[in-house]
Amino acid sequence: MSAEHRVVSARRTVHASPATVFGLIADPARQPAWDGNDNLADSAPGHRVRAVGDTFDTTLTTGAVRRNLVVEFAEGRLIAWRPSEVGGVPPGHLWRWELDPADDGVTVTHTYDWTDLHDEKREARARATTAERLLASIDRLAALAARQD
Image (tube, rainbow, N blue to C red; front, top):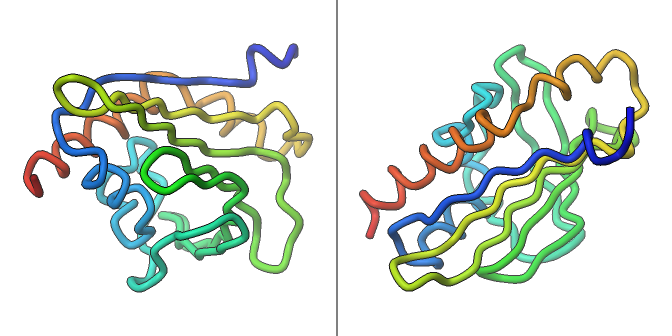
C-alpha cells in the first residue's frame, strides 16, 4: 500500500477559542470525551501536555494501556503523539492535531498517519480509522469547546 493511503485527515472550523480547543486536546484526561474512534476509556488527570518529549498514558476500551510520546508541539497550534505499549517501541503510527485561527473560531485538522506502521496485527485497525472517524472526534471536540467558551 502506498504512503498516501496511510495518511487520513479531517478538517473543520470549530466555533470556539483556539485556547479552549487546544486545552481539550492537550489534556489527556479530556480525550475520552471527544474520541470519535470510541477507543479511549480513561486517562489520569494532571498530565497536561506542554512539550515534545512529554508522555501520557491512556487506557483503551479493551483495558490495554498505551503510553503516548509527544513528538510535535507548539502551544495553541500543534500537538502530535506516537502511541505504544508501555515499555515498548512505538509501532509507527501518529496522531496529529493542527489549529489555525479562523474568523469565526479555529480551523482544526486532525490527522492519523500510519505510514511507518509495520505491525500486521495493527493494520486492520489502522485501515478502520477513516476520515469520518477523525471528523467525529472534531465534532465531539467542537461540542465540548462550545460548552466551555
